[in-house]
Image (cartoon, rainbow, N blue to C red; front, side, top):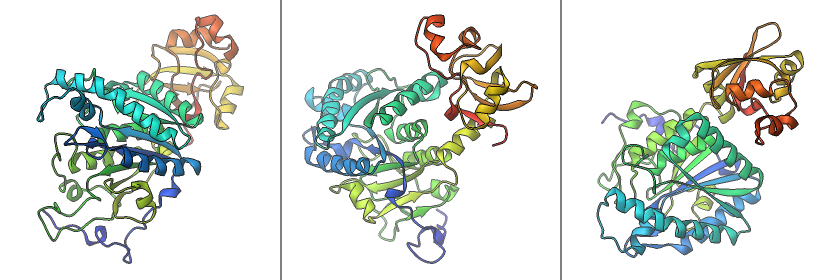
Length: 390
């Protein structure tokens, strides 16, 4: 293995990047692994540990921070209830265990967060929900509305329907996808290790913790390890992969020891961890993705009022659309053009082309009467567009 750059292992020395603080972030995703939540020997939830984490979440929430949780544990809990033997499970056994364990897991989170005066929402997702743009937009809108209502979404992979071919296989990368989807600016991976080391600390006494990773390089990726246990499908390799996803989406990420009581409190107090930094932010990263990474499927021609409104940072309403071109589906990228035909920007369509054409030029109040259902008020939401001048 190549020698690690000294700047990456100097904690607090001159020239090392400054470490962020937990209270700097406005929207935080906290990923909790099965090995932290579930007693592996008894197959039971660690209620005292969960109650302490809920206290941490409550304190963050009280400061105005949006908090989302990505929680493993359904299969580990369910296999205990069903008294399934230790060792690898067949797919149908994993799905049965998840079906039983998910009820217990959701109830436990609701009770723990409820003691902090917080409302809990359960969200089950699959790979397709974060890869297919229509479903991605629906999930993003649901998460956004829940946080506007000050609820705490608890997200897990839908193990009851996922298959070997399409499942994530670990919740680290799922958490990174959720962080990107939710527009989070920090992802916290609570693990059974307190960060990324220069070598496996269990076997190398000279291994050193890397406090901050300014950029993920080949030497950082080379430090990846394997899966830790039958209950935890992730390992350091998947955590570094999650960091690549999160930082590309504009979110910082940290790996910290979750085995301590009040793990978020320990991080806030300066506890040992590894920070992965990002040069972007969620809004800028998303707009860059919309502007340059997606092939446009159609065109919306706008009137002067609508063109002026979106340049001022407003959403595009149906009333401002003069004409619709192309065949596109909800979630596809479209070009927005002004009255002179010049491109104003690009965005993600909130309606299929046919429905967009039907409501073009009409008030948002008329959408339900025209389409037969109460659709979204915006043709393109301001969070889903990138202007040409940006």
